[in-house]
Image (cartoon, rainbow, N blue to C red; front, side, top):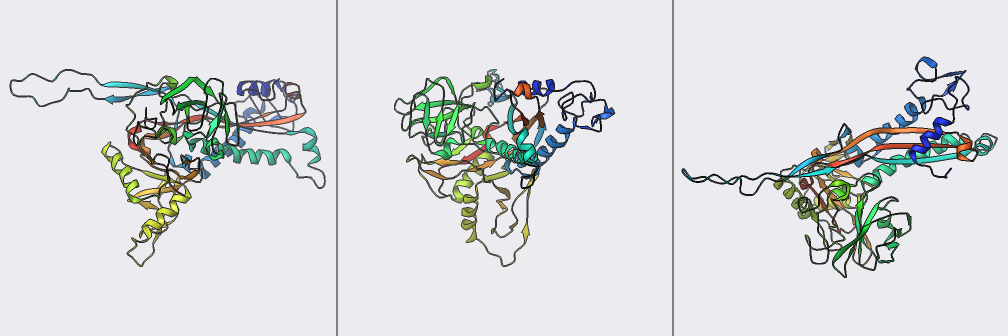
Length: 461
């Protein structure tokens, strides 16, 4: 058995590790994933070990799900919805040219045209976190001078890691200039490489040729420091752009707020593939084209600049022009304090009245109605996010965090399965005397209107 089994293999092992007869399982496991044994009976309803109520999933999976909904920042600001019986949706991208016009009293009617409908495919993604402890370490940890319950300690740490992983996936950057590489590697600052994940499909824009070289898509197999290892077939050189084709995990907000078909030194808004990369809409059955270019991407071609109120105002303006209404401004703590300093000179009142604004299940920092210690800007809640992605300059230097202006009415986290907990004590299947645990969550972040989202990149800290 492989040291890193798939999720289906893991579940099968957990079920094989028990005997269905009551009381004959190996200490902890019962049928149907788990039912904790105590005094010869199970905690499942009816006490017969066959209940679908499983105390481990109920207790520990629910605990992580509760923490995920009460501690994570950006995840907590978006509405959560049940996945439902859908695998995607359709969006109207063109209302039909010439179908509406003035008509004179005896003039001809407008030509009949039809709407342009695009299909957006969306399937749930799995995020898993594993941990384990050997039988000997579990025993010796209980002795005098030991750490205590080593399995419980690892479980607690894994819960924290699982929550952090989901939020970081939703806050991953999408495309970065490389400082070198080969057919199997893309080299970039380690901060940028951390936004790629094993299993992601990575494309490359060849800056010297001014064209895309996808080679059928290259899957990330390893990440070490600033080196992202991909499948053979795409040669990265200094100045080329490595960008995400598709995510193995949750789609990030940076993937969503991106202009389509904008790449190369002389194309796209402002012209920089590193800042306005082409998210390949053909992945997952989506149709490529310029129809999603309405997402505003305000960059500076890889040159750092200070955040200004005008940059934010332009994002708000374009979202409203496109029919949306900004509901959330998301930024890193560096831009949060910079914006506070920008507005400090506008304070005109002596009184200080602290207040907070609710954003989904999250709340802003306490702010005042005079612009200091910000809670809102132009009535839009501001949410500082420590995992907010950063930009990289053309000189391969890591810049400050991006700023996102979002209409969250069209953003959601669809959940197919809330966080589940699985434990495995099948020593023969594992070929080791170890106890392993697994947390996994099944869901995806979705956007039903790209036109009403915006981001500002290439900002100084």
